[in-house]
Image (cartoon, rainbow, N blue to C red; front, side):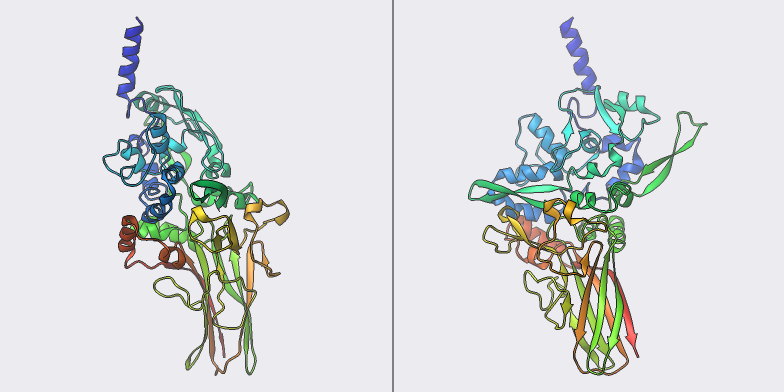
Length: 475
């Protein structure tokens, strides 16, 4: 009798996609969730392991050991990582790891952050320490969503997951699973500390958007879908598009996803604005104030330290350019920039440039682009979200290297003074630019096969995106 029972269980499991594995590929969900699948496939979540910049950077960091690949896998290819560890296999990415098409977990890995990872998380926790049921077998595995689907029994029968209602998908904590990341600081073969690689959720948590506007409000646009239990009884149900759009339009363009890149660029352009708020022209000088306003629910820019924003100012008269600060070259370098460029409240020369960024340093305080060498930030003047309260903020979100009364939650104001001969009429133009990969991070990549491939793939793509601009004419 026991043998028959075990046989029946084995046959039942074999009927489900991917047998007794606790995950399934997104194609498993495609038949009934076409809209979600199509949205997700145009997101950085689906491209988390295909991202050529991530692969190139990882190839540099992984020199410290395979533990680095396993550390990164928990957010960039969590399904493959968890399934591999459950089966006692190695959870690596490069060479013979998950990116190798012959790897037994390749089909799970290549989909990055996919459906049956997020929808099986029971409890959220930062640094990808989320809780997932690692014991229950199909068809007794819960799959979570914000409501019970109209065809829940069909899901249970066909794919072996039992639909279970959960509201956690509507909370910012859920995004905090992978958008608060601490990476190990390594000396030799020893881990000597942990470094806050990104703290996006903590930034939001200490903003005026908490709790009424969680991440999902901006990054998952609402819509409606027709659903029914019988064809004659259609009704509408609210749902969220699964684009998960962020600011990384560059990599989506490199990957050939033009629709996804356009959405990313749109959300980037809505996240910050720049304007001239006062202009004074004397006989021998011009003084004007530039204001940058942060509309994002976190710092601008946020996330991985290679992201930065640059203020470009040009003053012209009829004879040409009188003054220029923040000119950006085609390779992403900024004219006149030191590294790290200090934060400015007052700019009166062309070699001073306002750049909003976080700069990592090693144990000796020397700037570094290597995560595993990073011990602290020696600069973080990224514009704070509105409502940011320093007294209640997480210590890893406090600004560094900013002594400026005009730098306040949600805003920064920079005064420019130009003392040069000019003739009227005069035109002042200010532009705010964004870079996913700063020139320092790009140039600092050490040569590997993955880095060489990335450099080839990036040829012909602009490293810099215009976020917003403003101008004024003095006649």
